[in-house]
Image 1 (cartoon, rainbow, N blue to C red):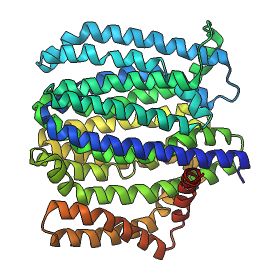
Image 2 (cartoon, one colour):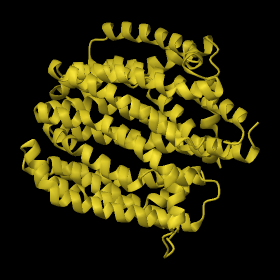
Image 3 (cartoon, helix red, strand yellow):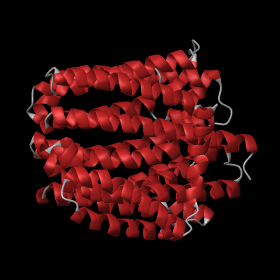
Length: 484
């Protein structure tokens, strides 16, 4: 059994992390809908063209050191300070690089406006680097209550300012203002609440020890970031900005849902599993339960999102975004296995096997590139279908080592899904039938979403899916605190 103190901290951490993620993603969803109604698909397309440059910059600024600090057992203030100075130094390097190469980015896409956008957005790289260690310390302490407040505050303030600038007719610059403001508010609050300042020291031995782990995480991150962003780069170059906007919007909401589920569990489980790395029996028991809970949430959520994507986009985002509907539907199925894939890699990291993490991602990249090359001439739908294929291949690869080390591989993990799939199928048939009858998109949203949840929970109860109990374990601590 888990140590009672660790178990209590895990449940409380999961509760506050759940509250944080749901609040942030919920508010972000509302702000995103408002932005989408005001702005044009081409505005999102412009930001999407720059995504790969900022994704790589953020990746190298962190370089896997946050994971290395969490995984290390006896971390010291020297370790924290060393990582802090490394983060800031690399951030300054990438900011300078992007600032002077901004005109080249504009020439690559043949859109001069991208040069100025790049230079302003690059400020977020330096701002974010100042608070990476503070955020990592909160994760190590499982202090997700403070993180919840900080994240929620930054989203509300930056979203409100962004909406104001959008209404004032600033177009794509409203998205830039929102991003920069969010970074400033979050960094300021992390400094205020964490009350941590670095020592005036940079330790070579500390850096070398941490980099032994983080370098593999960085290598895997490079491959993953390349894989996740190469699509936007290629689509932005080969298709009009509007098409990239449709693609960006079509994948945004499925990613939002699956990332919500992934981060809720991953943020808490990495430090927990890392603390159990010397007890493999306990580790795999905990991991197995996590997989079951993640499956319970994600398969249902992605399926219902696919069914409701048409009414959602037409009613809330307006008809100008209608071309994104089939892309969103396909992307929902591309994200069905994503949280389970991510948890399998988290297990490897918690064991200190970041080398295997890197190996798995290295195998996926050529597969993704081949599919991208094949599907580009066939259009956006074919490209997204390529996402579905790579997600299945990725899941099969990511479950290999859990199967080898713990006897909990792909077959056993698929078996954990069978009852959830059955409950989801029942929900899908009922909701899809009701959608045909209802006359307007408003009614489809108003009735379809709660109906889907009720049918799914009822089917889960009838099929005796145990994860319903886990839901109450996560929610109860929040309600108990509210009553006090």
